[in-house]
Image 1 (cartoon, helix red, strand yellow):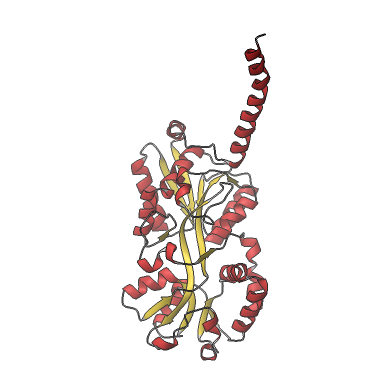
Image 2 (tube, one colour):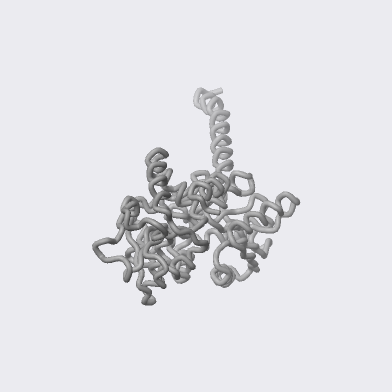
Length: 341
C-alpha cells in the first residue's frame, strides 16, 4: 500500500472516533438538535403549559399559529405551584400530555432536576445574557421580574427615600412600615447568594428586627401601598412602574443587587410533539416573540429588544438571577425566620 494511502488508513479510525465523540457530546447536551419543520407538520399540534396570565398565553398561541398554520396549539394555564404539581402528578401516572412549559425559574429548574425536561438549545439563545439560560440547554429565560424597593411618594419625603437595601434598616422604617410578600423566599435566597451567607444572615436578622408587615400577592401589595396603607414595600419594579404611569403616587429605586426572578421556557422530555414544541420555543425566544412579551407589559430577557421603559433596561441594572429549584428555596424556613404564621 502506498505511504499516502497507509497514512490515511491509519487516521481513518481516529477521525471516525472523534466524529462520533463530538456527535455524542453534542447530542447529550442538546446542542445538535433543531426544530424539524417537516416533522412538525406531521405532528400538527402542540400543548403549552403556562404559569403566565391566560390572556398572554392565548395571544402567544394565536400569533404562533398564524406563523405556523399547520400546527394546532392548545394551552393550559395555572399558577406556578399548582402547575408544577400537575406536571409531577401526570408524570407519576405515566401521562405525557404537554410539550412546552413556562413558569418561574425555580419551578422549571425543579423539573430539570427531576429529569422531566429535554435539552434544546434554541438558535436564539445567543441573544440572552449569561445566567439567563441553562448552560446544558434545558431552559432559556423569556422575561423577568425584578425585585426592588418601592415607596409611596406622598408618605416618603424625597430626601428620605430608602435607596439601598441597607437603607431599609433605618429606624424610621421599623414596625410594619415595610411590606413584604409571604412568598418572597426567592428574594431571600437571591440576597443570600448575592451578598454571601454571613453578610446576608446579618442583614436579614436586622431586617427581621424592623418588624415588617406581610401580605400575599404582589399586585395587592402595590395597590395597598398606593392607597397609603404603608410607605415602603419590597416588590416587583414593573408592577410599580405600570401603576405609576396610571397616576398612582408610588415609585421605585434602583438597588444593588436587584434580584431577578426569571420566567424560562423548556421542552418536555416526553413531548408528544417535540418538533412543534421546538418551533414554539424558537418563536417565543425570537425578536418577534420578545416584542410580543413587551406588548404584554413584560420585561423581555432578550438583549436586542428595547426595554419596556428606560429604567427597566436590564443592561443598566445590576441583576442577580435566582437559578435554584423550588425545593431549595425552602419557604418553610423563610416563614419561620420572619415569624410568619
